[in-house]
Image 1 (tube, one colour):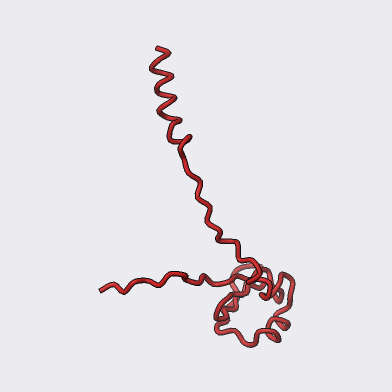
Image 2 (cartoon, one colour):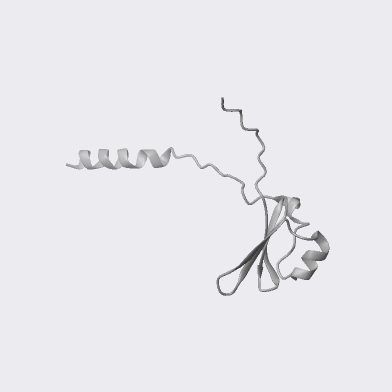
Length: 99
């Protein structure tokens, strides 16, 4: 009885011992985010630094969250202050034409 139990445990744990960890550096934007609006910055300040957004989304929820989309990044506001700035994904490899 001990041998089948030990064999079963070994079979169940074997895939875990050989698992590979893959790290995807999504959040590693480095110095490229240094120029983005910072948390706490006012809408007026963002407007003065970056000009009018390409698209302004209406407030959603409570407290109201507003999003301004620029060409390469988006800025999220709670009331009139920045709560987050996010770079848009930039594709590094061109998609092959599908014909």
